[in-house]
Image 1 (tube, one colour):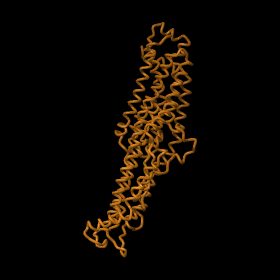
Image 2 (cartoon, one colour):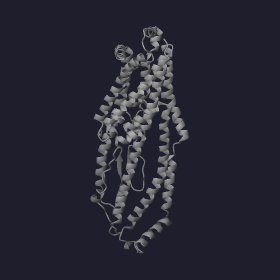
Image 3 (tube, rainbow, N blue to C red):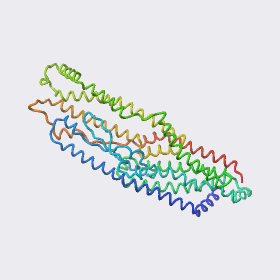
Image 4 (cartoon, rainbow, N blue to C red):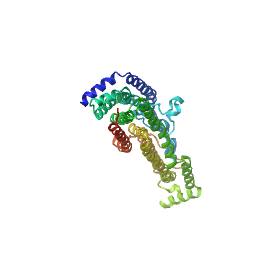
Length: 467
C-alpha cells in the first residue's frame, strides 16, 4: 500500500511546476557561487605549489654566507588549499595563506583571499555551502508547506481519511516522495560540483577528498530533510496552507538567521576572543628581558666556563652560533607558553561555538561542513604548527652548523649550498579523514538530534491530524 502511495506521490510531484522552478533557481545559485569560488581556489592551490618550488630554489641558490645570516634570509612557506574549499571555503578566505620563516621571529600568516575579493562576494552565501545553509531550508519549506494543508483546504484530505486512508501511510508516502525530490535537487548538484572541485583543484588524493565529498553531501541532505519534516509537520497542524507557510517561514528565520547571530554573540560573551596584540607584547617583553646586555654577558661567560677557556678564540665551537642556538631554545619556550594560552582560549571558544549547534541546525551543519571540507580553524592551526616546526628546524640547523665551524674575524666561516640543502622542503600533510570524522562527532550528534526532533514533531502531528 505504502509503495503504491509513494509511486502516486512521486508522479504528482514530478508534474508539480513548483519543483521545477525551485530546482532551477537552487541549482543556479549553487552553480553560480561554485564558479565564482572555483577560480580563486584553483589559482591559490596552483600558486602555492609553484611558488613553493621557486622559494625552494631561491633558498638553495643563495650566496655563501654565515649560516645564521641564512636563517635571517628566510624562506616562505605556503598553505595547501583543500579541493573542497571550492564548495565550502570555511574560514580559509579570512586566514593568511603564506608565512615567512626566519630566525627569531614567529611571523603571522598573511595574504588573505578575502582581501582580493570584491565586496559583493564577501557575504555568507558566496559559496555553495552558504547557499545550502540559507536557501535550501527555504526551498524545502516552499515544497512541503502544502503537503497536507492544501488538501485540507480543498476537502480532499477529509475524503481520503473518510475512505479509510491511514494518516501514517499518507505521511510516509508524501514525505518519502518529497525526500526523494529534495535529495535529487540538493544531493546531485552537490556531488557534481564537488566532483568538479576534486578534478580541477590539485591534491584531491592527498586530502582524501572523495570520501569527504560523500560524507559532506549526506550531511547537506540530512539538513534539508530536517526542514522538510518541520514544513510537513506545520502542514499537518495548520488549518490552512497560508498558516503552514507562515509558521514554517518563522522557524526558518529563527533557526537560520536569528539563532546563529545570537549564538555568536553569546559565545563571545562566555568565551571572549583573546587579544593577539597583548600576547605578542608579552612575548616581545620577555625576549627583550632575556637579551639584556648584562644577561647576555653572563651567558657568554657560562659558555666559556663550560669549555674551560677564558677567551672565545680558544673555544672548540663558534661562540655566536652557540649563543644563538641557546637563545632560540629560550624563545621557543616563550612562544610555546604564550601562544599556547592564546590557542587554548581560541579552542575553548570553538568548542562552545560547536555546542551552540544545539540552538540551530545551521550552526551544526556549518561546523560539520568546514571540518569535512578541511577549511576550518583546526586545519589552519595544523598549518601554523607545521610552519613553526619547520622554522625551528631551519634555525637549529643553521645555528648548530655555525656553532660547529668556529671562524675568526680574518677567516669567517661561510656556508654554501650543501648546508642549505640540509633543510628539507617544507611538507604539510593534511589531517587524515579519520581525524576529521572524530572532530565531526559532536556536530553530527547535534544534527541527528535535530533530525530526531523533526521526526518526533511530524509523528505527533500525524497522530493528531484532523480533516
